[in-house]
Image: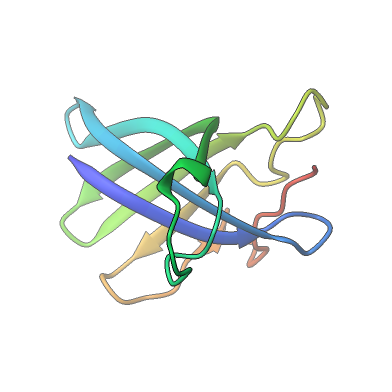
Length: 113
């Protein structure tokens, strides 16, 4: 099992924090639902956990090619707009601490709201 967090931005520049719990679905393949969380900051006093919402917004898959490289694929939809999916659908990360580039093009994924 893999717990993933992904901090990105939508087209308006608003923060888009996403998370997913990925479970093994095949040899070297883990997949799960992407969740968008919203609510008060954790530092709020008092913190109201009832004000936190979790919305399913897509899927994510990580496929390991070996012990040092993996491919991250995702699909995100933010509302009823069919164009609200990523322009780039996957990225490759090589090495445990190396930065990732989407589809080798060096373009960070963005989403339509």
